[in-house]
Image (cartoon, rainbow, N blue to C red; front, top):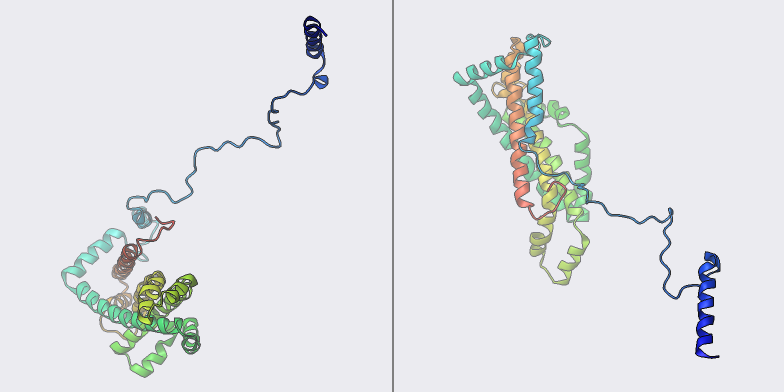
Length: 305
């Protein structure tokens, strides 16, 4: 076939192909384009959404107490709250000033703080030692953990009648009652912190031949520290809770005694002053423990930031 005849044949095939329907055309040599259907839509990633808690709110811890104080003041100002049942905030402030001026509040506060500190000290030391011994030995756990769980099921306040028979109504009974209410949360959370230490750290310590003392220092104590600090937060508030009760049982001094005496004379403003003092002491104690927790556990990356 000559060159001119071949060109005529090629042009004829091209014209036939262009005029033919899509289904009858010859497949193209290039790669087919991907077919997009509704069943397989192209996923477009939008801007990243923040799932965390975000930035801390300045003085966010004060929002709740301020709202409660505003409701209290509004109720007292409008007469919705009877002053015989709940004194107005400004009356409580005036009464607190009078108690500070005559020295009653300071002396009772010093007595209560001493009792709470002693009970907290004995309870924390006892709970920590029992948790370490029980957490590091199966035999010790069998001996210690059962009685502690039984004690946890019995409220410390239910033991007051028995403690009065054993220790009388003096300072010993009050301090022991506070200590019994403190050592249980310290034991529970420290023991749990010990038992949740990752076993890979233990295997690593065995691999590098750590001594028992080094193992306690570098693995056990850092692993148990978060649980211990959580138990301390429960312990400090539990100490003030137990103090409220023991100071209303045959006490002659302390914030609880001042409140009990005010109940006898129907002085609701003095009772509110005592409650506010207990609340402030509890908040300050918890804030102090949280500050220590934030400083000592700064290496953790948690949701709280």
